[in-house]
Image 1 (cartoon, one colour):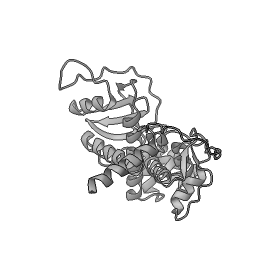
Image 2 (image 1 turned 60 degrees about the horizontal axis):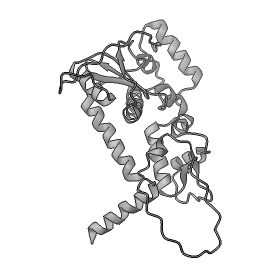
Image 3 (image 1 turned 45 degrees about the horizontal axis):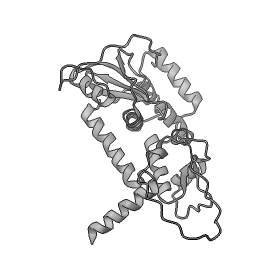
Image 4 (image 1 turned 180 degrees about the vertical axis):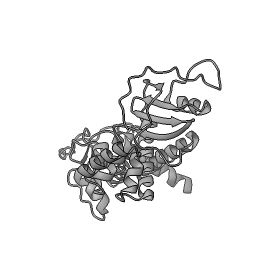
Length: 279
């Protein structure tokens, strides 16, 4: 079961390409640990990746709902039922996955899908937001492990696809972690029920991770919904300046240069480039 780890960190493996220095980015460290078929936990600034024989068996991040949050958030189990099943697993020596399936509370396929969603959610965040704090250490077996461990290359490809998809929808990573709010006067016509729920939860105080926890949904799926809403002009970072009142007519002034870091400008530049490519 989940245990707080206080064991000393082990030295990270040396890079196989250079043979002289330990990996410093979490993606490089993960690749080296896979190459050495390591077992343990790789701790980054945004979460943890659990490995067994060089393959990823679990991932967790404070910014991503785990299996418990997904099952209770969507109403599949209540908090009391979860606690009851956890006690039963401890008393019988079963894993939590075995207990949930054998009790009939959750089907094996449903639980595996939930586990995979939680792992990919957390891995996306860990690999996208890692800083310099990286360490590898022995760790107890996680509460849940994937039925089929993921190779590191397979995991990195899956995370890369998610990054590409998000940038195609709306190229603004700020929306992934900042508190978001509904834009003033925005009318969500034609909005799906799923995205309307996200829009209603965007109160200017909640981050995408908090919205995902509130709704019991995938962290990545929630971020994707938020970027779709931003692309339609319905949502924005809470730190964005409020729209200014119309100013009185003034003498023309020289146009300011475009700032490519502005997500709106970036989108317009991409649209222009696409149109020019078709001419």
